[in-house]
Amino acid sequence: MKLSKELLARLHENDALQVPAEACFTLPEKVLQFGTGVLLRGLPGFFIDKANKQGLFNGRIVVVKSTDKGSTAAFDEQDNLYTQCIRGIDGGKPVSENIINASISRVLTAATQWNDIMDCAASPHMQVVISNTTEVGIVYVEESIHATPPASFPGKLLAFLYRRYQHFKGDATKGMVIIPTELIPDNGSKLREILLQLSAFNQLEEGFIHWLTNNNYCCNSLVDCIVPGAADIALGYEDELLIMTEVYRLWAIETNSEHVRKILSFSEADAGVVLSPDINVFRELKLRLLNGTHTLSCGLAFLAGHETVKAAMNDEAMAAYMEGLMMHEIIPAITDIHIRNDAAIRFAGAVLDRFRNPAIEHKWLSICSQYTAKLRMRVLPVLLQYHRRTAHVPALMALGFAAHALFMRGGSNYTITDEQAAWYAAQWQQHTPEDVIKNSFSNEAIWGYNLATIPGFAQLITTMLKALMEQGVAVYLEKIAAEIAVS
Image (cartoon, rainbow, N blue to C red; front, side, top):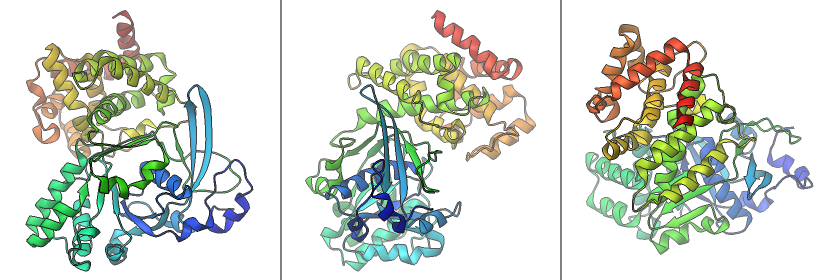
C-alpha cells in the first residue's frame, strides 16, 4: 500500500517509524519553497517537520516546482508525505531512523499554477522563503515580473514579494525572511542585489524598494548534508518519494536580527540549525573540502568505473587521491587567520568518514550535474589561492580538471547535464585534446578567468588528459596514487 494520510493510522503502531500526529495537517502554510529536490526535503524539510512535531515552528511548506522536468504526481498521490531514512555513524555508534515527514502541504507547478502561487502572497501566515535552484539559479535576467510566470527564480520571487507588498499595502510586519541554500558565496546578499536590480528594471515604485530593503531579510546560508536521494529500504509500504540522508546535518544561517531568530523558531528543534552573525568559516570548510573534493573527483571516479562515492572510497587509488587532494592541496590553500589548520584537518577527516558511510549510495553521475559551473564556483578560487601561495601548479587539482575535460567529451553510458555541454561537444568534434584544453582555459566566459595565464597549468592538464585517454583512467589513477604515497 502506498504512503498516504489514510495509511498513517496503521503506521502509528510501528515502533521503527516516527509518524506525524493528525494535528500537523492543520498547521498554517508559513514557508514558500522554490525547489522540489531531495536536499530541501532532507534538510530544511527535516528541521521544520521535527520542530512541528515538538510544537515549535507550527507551519508547513508550499513547494514551487519551477521547471517542466519531472512530475508532481507522487506528491499528490501520497498527500505530500515522504519517508526520510537516516543512516550512518554518530559518536562511534550506528544510527538508523525512519521518519515520515509531513512538512509539505502542497506542491504547485509554476507553469500551470502561477495564480495559486501568487495567492500565497496574500496569506498573513507566510513568513519564510527557501530556495535551492543550483548554482545557476541565482542569476540576473532582465524580464518583466508581470509574466505568468517570470522565467528566472529571482523574477518569480520578486513577483511574489511585489504582490505581497501590494496586498498588505506596504505593511512593515509582512516582510519575508528569505534563505537561499544554493551553494554560492554570500547567496543571500547576491539574491538581494539581483532583486533590487530587477526592481529597477521593472521600474517599481520607491515605496516598494523601501519595503523590500528594510522589511525583508535575505540571509546568507549554508547547507551541509549528503542526501543521495532514493534508497531501497523495505518499510512495509510503498513510497516513491523516500529519501536517504546521512546523520551529519548543518544548516548555518547568517543573521544578527532578533526578529529573524524569532521567525526561524525551528532552529530550536535541532542542533544542526546554527544562527550566527558570520557563517564564513562553515561555508569555506564545507564548500572547499567536501564540495570541492566531490567536484574534482566526480568525473575521475565515474570514468574509473566507480558508480558511487562509497565504491570509490573502497578503491585504494581513488581514496588516496581524495585524501591527498584535501590534505596536500586544498587545506594549504584555504587555511589562514580565520580557518585554523587543525580545524581544517579535523573537518577533512570527518568528510572522509562521511564519504565512507556504508548506507549512503551517492552517485557520482549526480554529482557531475552542472560540472563546469561547480568547478568554477567551488574549485577555481582554491586553485588560484594555491598558486599565489606556492607558485606551483597543484597536480591533483590539475588531474581533476583533466578528468572534467574527458568527461565533457561524452560517452554512450551517460548523459551530460551541463550548461557548457554543447560547447564542449563542438570542441571535441573539431579539435585535438591539446586545443580543447587551450580553447577551454582561455575562455573567460566559461571560467570567469583566463586559466591559460597560470604558468604550466594547461600544459600539465594536457599531459594528464592524454595519459587518461591512452592508459585508461583507472590505470593512470593508480600511478598517481603511488606518487601520493611516496610523497
